[in-house]
Image (cartoon, rainbow, N blue to C red; front, side, top):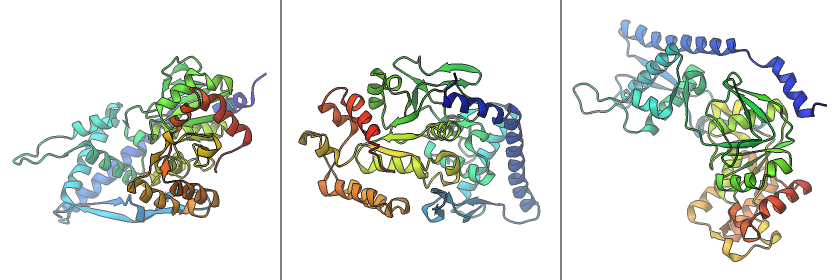
Length: 386
């Protein structure tokens, strides 16, 4: 008899977008690229200064949608003018990357963020000026193009390096290859950068929930102890701050298969921030919150009260520095945390303690304490923060 999760997968198969939808998205992106280029050409031919209008990716142009419980980008834009000394460089960079994206779409090939940096990297003729000084500069321009074109990075045929892992009771189809995530050994299934439905499909899922842990070191303990098998779940990690591919995978598993997401993160401002990004989205990627954020995700731990509750020793204490304190106070004032007493109490208790803790600190109790005692008990007691 099919499980509840399996039945959900079968229903989704009938509604899943066909390969033709990918071609339609490519056609739309090409049209938007052409429109962007034609605007520059028309201005030039009319004797006007070539300029681009780019949506502003900043905290000031980000709003909290309380009803949807996600961060969203506002309507503010900024101009990039060719003959403005302060804007000419970014104008040139934007046009260079737009041309590279057009090449990728026409060739029906993909490139990494690093490769895109090199594709548009050269020294401007007659000068010693390079088009890009470093990759971070290139990455930012590509994100600008995403919002300007209304197309996701995947639709621009650009991918990032793999930085997440998954194992558990699910089978996925990855570009036509069937991957049984129950038989992935000690390394697990490397979550790709692009996990859209025309690339990744879900099949044969028996899992009851997803446990997302912060780091690979903790994930390895859970995998070695076969936690996912004993507790019928999917186990993921994102190497700290999870990249878009991991967040998108979690979003799809949650929304398409109805799987709850529990986050096992460090008791520090950075663990709290990672949870915030998974749950509500991030300022820099607010334009993608609707396909990345998981408002119903739950924070399972580690928590300030665990120092006493788990009878941990002073050895696990890591003193908060000024940067930690400043970050914690910023997080307390996030609109989605500010009105939640439980989160105000949690962060205040950490500040009052004057120290932070990592999930790995539970190893002082026992090598498998986190998998055999801590997480099962928290789940049984429904001891999490929403």
